[in-house]
Length: 273
Image (tube, rainbow, N blue to C red; front, side, top):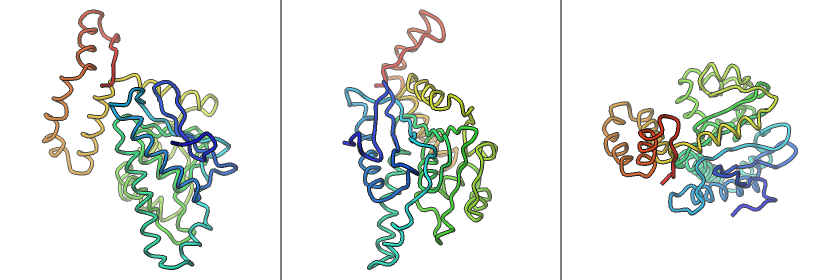
């Protein structure tokens, strides 16, 4: 369970579980942050389980302070590179952190990342593991690992390739440049660019809007999209009858259909079970 003084913690805002990065002044990723991130990921799995009595129906990731994150504390990499068995310890680190990104990606509810400012390296890679990336006008993004001789290794390259294509992914990583939100929106990396003023409130409103939808159907959508992207449309076709057919057994569908027929469109309510 994350605590209120942890550098990564979970707060509840109604049906939304809010993951908060709060490691001032730059929200750098260091050992305590990585540990807290793993704890938060495990907590999210429990909170989004359909059997949980107070189930979260969406996840919002946000950060405190002027920036989302200035990246990773490089002294952490130094300790690995200069210590015993650096290659094994490096591989172990990436295994741990990839598991966090995959856990976030596989949650059975919509996940939204809200980037209000500079978002570098590990934070950007976590954003790419979320379903929706919202960005403030002033925000910028970068995978700048080339400055320390690394490639991004929390899943960033492959998830950038899914969103923007392989050429754009390599360009962004090879240059190590910072890209404004408007550019990444054109590249299909950022879903929406929102005004700086009121950005936090707008991101919360968005998260609440998707949380109010049919949770089980959203989980089905995530499975179908992931299958199509990674295995092809025909592979998604093959699993669609089972995945989507199961929705006819949910309270979500029964109540939505009944309210549609009785009250007209726009009146549906969902239980998320």
